[in-house]
Every structure is written in structure tokens, then in C-alpha cells.
Image (cartoon, rainbow, N blue to C red):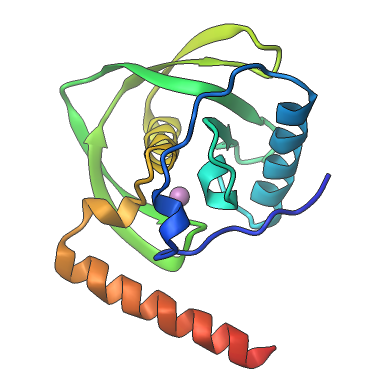
Length: 171
Ligand code: NI
């Protein structure tokens, strides 16, 4: 396994649209293992392949308190969303130290392939629902701050560029 570098907003590569995985083979399993290690190390509750500059439809998620319930979603598709919405305070490994409220459908159904290559469907609410929607956005090239106002986004963009410069200065 290897730790992968997480791209930071406003990196333009975060806006690439991911392609479907053709076959869940050894290469994909290696990517999943590396993504899981990177997510746990961060630590985070979810990671999309887009965030590590791999533009294929792969997500890893673990919303358990014990951080030992890894969920893998390959080629995830939303099949249903509830009309009810809910607002959650979200964060993202690609937007370090920034959190804000995003309103999304409360309950969703997602169809995906597992690591065994078999299709499964899951109904999600609470944190899993938020996390799945947030990560699926990444695969479409969308970062959660794009749900916020232009004013906020510009401010975040400046803050992240400043932060990146400071990090380079520390090396
Ligand atoms: Ni994110």
C-alpha cells in the first residue's frame, strides 16, 4: 500500500470528470487499498479517486466511530433521492480546515459495484448519505464549496492559495 497525495482546492484537476471503471481487477484493488490507507491516515470519512488525481469512478468511505468499516463504491450511481433535504456542516480533505453548511437530499439510494465486482444497492441516511453525495460530487468534478456562494468560494480560494504558499515556505 502507498499513501497518495490529496489535491487541494482550487487545483483544476479536481474539476475533471471521472470515467467508469471497466473491470474490477488487481489494478483497481490496488487503487482502493491505497485510497483507504490515505483516507485513514488523513484522517477522513471519505475519499474520491478524483482527489488523488485518479479520474475513475471509485470511492472509499468509512463513517464508523471505530474506523474499521470500510465501504467501497465503484461506478456509484444515484438511483433515488428523498424530496426532504437536510443541512450538514461539511468538510473535505481537499479543502483543509474549512467547514460549511450544505443542504442535500436527506435519504438516498445508491447502486454500485463492490470490490468483488458485484452490483449492490444501499439506502443511506445521516452521515453516510451526506458523505456519499459529497464524494459522488467529486467524481463529477465538483467540490463541496461549489454549493456555496461565489463570495464564499472566492474567499476560500484565496485562503487555500495562501495556505499552500505558507506550506511551501516551511519546507
Ligand atoms: Ni471532499
